[in-house]
Length: 208
View 1 (cartoon, rainbow, N blue to C red):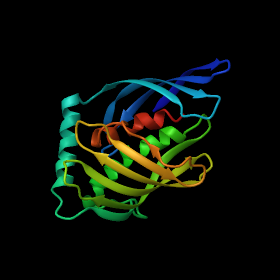
View 2: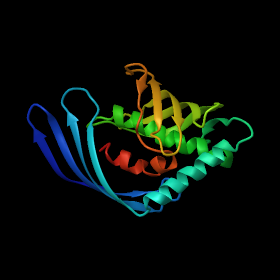
View 3: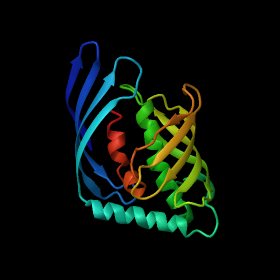
View 4: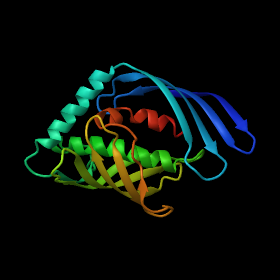
């Protein structure tokens, strides 16, 4: 849950929101901590400027362990991960596709942050397709086509992502979206794998 406790109108600059909200693990629904944030929506069209300070229920070591478990699970696949329509029409995700979904949640958050506006927000609705690329180095790499649910218009925005990740390194995302896109974008440095995905609630709360 979140609340806006102050809105500041900054002349010639935009509106600055002061927020307080709680976060939860996107997989289990368990409490993940609480946050204070400021979000500045510039008057000219550009991504919001977000500052967040959080207290997490998990320490950094636990988050790193989760990332390493996710990484090892992907690395030990005998075949490249491929899939479509995640989750399915009943909201289910096959266990074998859970790692790909976790990274899609983290990677798409960079697009949602970039495209959100004061009166417009986005949520990941579905992964339409995913394909893992096998690499000779230690990084893992995926290609995604995702659908983002635009609020309040209820429209669906289709985006293509190429995501590379190694635990302890920033998640690197390049993306291209449908109508209204400015072309290929580099969304590098948005966070780590499952840890970043579990903290997606922080990104969403910034889309007030």
